[in-house]
Length: 289
View: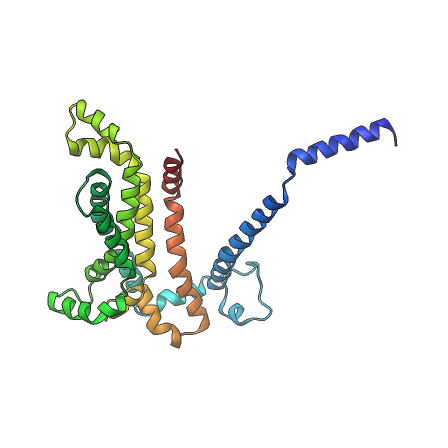
């Protein structure tokens, strides 16, 4: 082998070393586990989307095509053509939006109070907030139904949003509390010395920094409300959310209708998270500083 050939081979090895760094066994194992977890999560979503946008005959075909060779909106059009689906979809959107507003509107001030003020029973209060998630909502089904009927909130969007807000509020309080504790109190004190009131210092100094974390809490509230089915089923009759509507109809529906229903249960939450992903990344950036 000539010297020129050896030099050429060495250059290729150096290029491969730069493009493909040499990982240890532990790094390769970690990368493999991450790849398996990504496939575990993304593959069912891909198959669901593929089935929802395939012709009806392709749903029952065997062997199934795993690439989108034949895209069709017939299944989606049939899904929305079913009576009650579109109104249930709008109800879910309104309930999720109200849940976000209520949970953040109540959770952010509570989290700020936990982070900034010292009072007796502070730790016990924080523990009670967590314990509310351990209380089974099935036990409250009958009392909630009777109470909502008396108050005129039964079978209303606002009534379901109140229950969903109670489910999402502990997360909103704890997330916002941790976020406000990570923001130095000296920033507010500096704003006070500049002539700001306590509210002005909070709004102009703390809120811009806390917005990514509050957006993350809003994401959790939206996803909790969008996927919740038990309370939405027992508290609605003629105005159900999409999850409650599908629960009562999927057992008697054709297979392609089920795929379309699953698509509209999963994808909107993913789209919402993708739309506000920059706030999530900003939140992690704040946490890492």
